[in-house]
Image 1: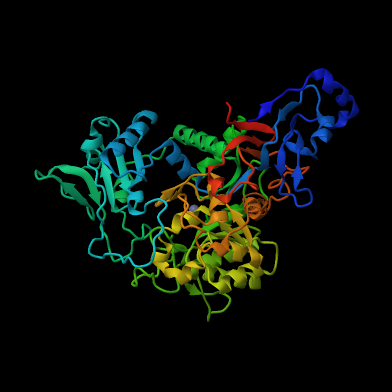
Image 2 (image 1 turned 30 degrees about the vertical axis):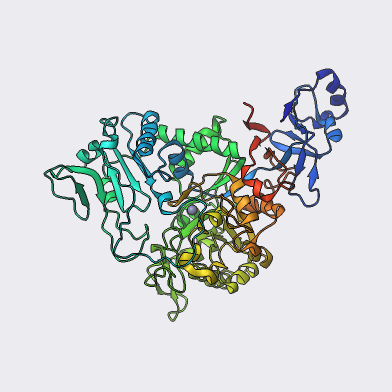
Length: 605
Ligand SMILES: [Zn+2]
């Protein structure tokens, strides 16, 4: 455990005279620092002045920087790494879940009731309770590793899962509308008030494209079914008529709620050692919230906010390029999506899914229209490519989501054409997820100095169904971190918090590092790891979560390692990550989190 000692002022006063020009306001000594600075990999102590490191070295050497008002922490040998930088956080969604409803692991009446009641007690009067995603773990047990063999049953397209009714929650929600959904969005559950607001009664017809479940007297039970077309399981393609029906009725969350969710998420980040993150999809109102809370001194994690690619022109009109912003709130990149996800078999592949030969997954809308290239009418070009060429030419960084092998291959081709058109430069193209790649594309990614913006816990999560869906051979190219690393690709880590519709894992870097180093599920399966030849070392995994993500954001000069001149952002852990057994990494906890030379999390408090 960590002991905090404020050294006696008489003792330190002598030192203050010696080096008056270099007084620290914050000193940490007797630590076991893993600095991620290759020229100085280990240290015992740091000194910080106004949020920046002014000394990294020995505990004896740091004493020169201590004066009367210096805050001094003695770590008693505890292990320290640079603050974790999460490359991919859906911040708004994370906050909504942390502060709101999560039913992923719920598939029974008792828990369904209890979870909704918890949120009911927390939310302001009248606020809708939405989301939930019940029964996900009923579909995919945690820790299970699926093998090939199961085939989608096209005659049972709704599946047989827990089906709640409104009686379960009506008792305590007479005044609060509730509309929650199953993980696959095929079924929703509304309480009586929500049904009333939508005009669904015993005598009303079913709204267009929605099947209202009713009891024998015609009274709605609360369950609302979306239509299912074709064989695709995709939540991207599902016609979500229920959401469309309720969209005009459900108000957007209030600013107060969003601020409460923001505080909750930063609290969570501090408790797991995340000191910087990329915000992927939050509503632009969050930029305002960030500024407000930064100015009031409440911001405890630094953000790089990424608007969608089709906003590149607005950014450009305002002169926003890579590097714009300050050390707390920064811009410079855009985000686009070209295919679906593995969780619901909508990722785009060259060949059909093994468990569903009628589907290769989908392309997102940004791929269309697919038109003649203005440069050469013989070439066809996606809307994505036209936007990307312009954004890139104007100094804006590109980050594009690709999961299936064809989606990743398309981006490699596109990047080659962008380089040809706009020329070679330091663009750090971020291949988001880089999930399943062919050997040729792994090789090309290295040659083009691509950043693989990966979230290693997807490995532990997705190995539960990967081989069942795409077979063993293609699975070899899934989360191929070792080969990506060796090809010269910059491998950067993060979480994709709050997760997918199949799993919620929030922000804990230890789970991702564990997954990258062991390639096992949380329950330790399979023994030896899944495609173990793709494991990274613990040192590499720490690097991917710190300096590599800083590099991916053009911030390696101020973040990502414990070096003089950089921001004083670091984390004290309960164990020495380098020395413990890889299987134990997932249980390591954070004792202290420091951001800008200030303690933002202390487990003892
Ligand atoms: Zn994401």
